[in-house]
Image 1 (cartoon, rainbow, N blue to C red):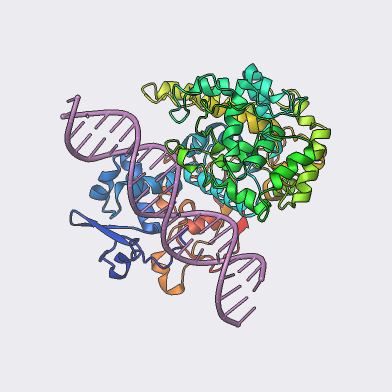
Image 2: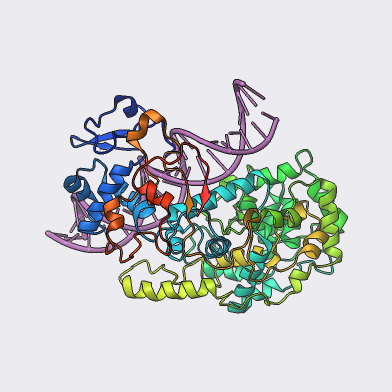
Length: 527
DNA sequence: AAAAGCAGCAACCGCATCACC
DNA sequence: GGGTGATGCGGTTGCTGCTTT
């Protein structure tokens, strides 16, 4: 499907005159390299057919030769992308199923923005599709002021981590960080993890023997919202990671919560009955610059940015849940008063989730993800034994249980709802929370699919964005635009019914294939 | 009804990695 | 070991339709 109608495409096939001057200026029409004018922009059905035919004859790869051998005026990269994302068989189209969404969430929580690897575990889905899905969701949630992490996903993740790494579990189920004397306490196991990570995480300074609590709190205190954060660290350490999910600018988050009052944090602490009694090194000898652990760059603001590491590009472990769930579990706005109350309640009655053992899932999680990962690992071992990165689900720094990266994930996962102290009633958070086992998230309240659909086609009009006068330049809706010859070819993909794996093309889709405009409207009919 | 903003998607770009010479 | 081309990946852009104001 091409909605880029403004970008002129060719005239129903190989452009006789590919140079389209009015597109050159736009930078997305044609480009010229080595005297060969390469077309950009949306693909047409004819181009698709050419590419499909080429792949059928020559197989995948050698994409740069496509242009030479097939006459396509597309660069190799463009061809590869088109094939991978739209033309190759077994591609699923349409909305993600609930299972797929849940899997994406799990995978993203584990991998970060490794779209290709995630796509490898989602049959029929492309990295681009997953990426777009995720970015769209994240954007929407950010705009709504919601964190990307759903409760159950966090619980699952932390449960798995807890069982896999007892030291992390110690954090997960450990104390709240509130010592009898009211001082703040951060389990040093956290910093043990940090120290252990120093070898491969260059941004982590030499922690030496500095007190973990003093180190972090000292850093926090340098920030204008440090008081808030230090409180949150104790209340809900998961916020560390959570904040970073908002574009890495937790300052915005905080300011949005308390836009006019920098003293709110102190008030909170006072309301909680705590004072800032850090065990700071009085001489300041161990006064290390603030450091970032995963996601904790949110600690940095204008005051401490000079010591802000820049080497690490942080990926967000990202978790989501349905909007409905969010509505019930997350806050969208918060008043300082609510915040105070939340924290207060939190102190008085520690959340259930903090005491909960890893009961929701076992290390293999629900089995779906792990089995896929296992499968992929096996496959990867076979097919990519030479992968020098060895990152195909092999332990990476982020995957290593003892790493700081992981501890951060476990940290926020522990509490499931890391941002809640900012406004969501702690009571509501922990009382309302009901583990959603197995059901996964239901984004946008989409009805659950009973099973993983083999193919969920969402048919769209072939020429939905096409003006009548441009019928000959039909931008292709890839999967529906297979040439008749290819569809008729039962041996093309070993699928007697053509490329529509698991589903015989409907008459409509066949009509698409034949290039006949069935609808000028965008009414979509679920297959 | 018009304008503005949002959502979803396809495609492009730059960089990293790999394979081959 | 270095150079070069091919490929893969992740981030970003640009476009259109839809929704909201």
